[in-house]
Amino acid sequence: MPLQNRVTPFGEIVAIAQRGLFTGNRGILHDPATRTLLKRRWASKAWLVCSCTYRSRRRSVMGGRSWTELFFLDEAIALAAGHRPCFLCRREAAERFRNAWATARSEPRPLAAAMDSILHQERIADGRKRVHRIMASLDALPDGSVVAVGECAYTLRAGHAYRWTPEGYADPRRLDRADGLLTPPSTLGALAAGYRPMLHPSIAAPREGHGHA
Image (cartoon, rainbow, N blue to C red; front, side):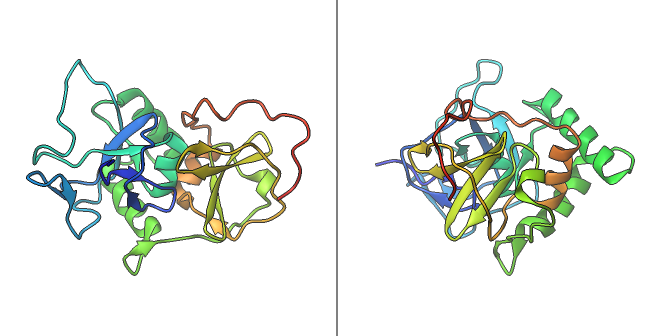
């Protein structure tokens, strides 16, 4: 039985076999004796996207009390859920994210805590995942944006949309519309300013013959 530590684009933490490309955390959310989640879904405003490997360190997943290891299919999904690159294990990516954030907002480079505070307002509303209005056409959204259509989430790349599933991404298709934006607006700004999230290999070049959703 998989542990309940996989994160969906809607920010939910579920028990599915999918692991993906990245780990991360929101603080300590689990009981190490049972390796099960407690009721809370975050213990800190610092929601991080971390590398699955760092200096040959090995951890017992959900076996200690330092932080709860969460897993994401790829970085687009982690960003949509409200996380940001870690300044410890992903320093280069974190600096690129911070630079793009500052460029998008025409402000000096922010401290990590300042980004976390803004992101927390953008990712949570009344204790639940916040879904934002889409202020532009879908074709104008940068690659790596994630939108919601009903209860489904789609990652956008090169004019095509890839539906997130517990097994990975489904085949690409075109979207005419979406109900809302899952990627927080400040993160969307960083994507538009040039930050390139690492996408899962299953998002390949669009193939001919895929129609509209």
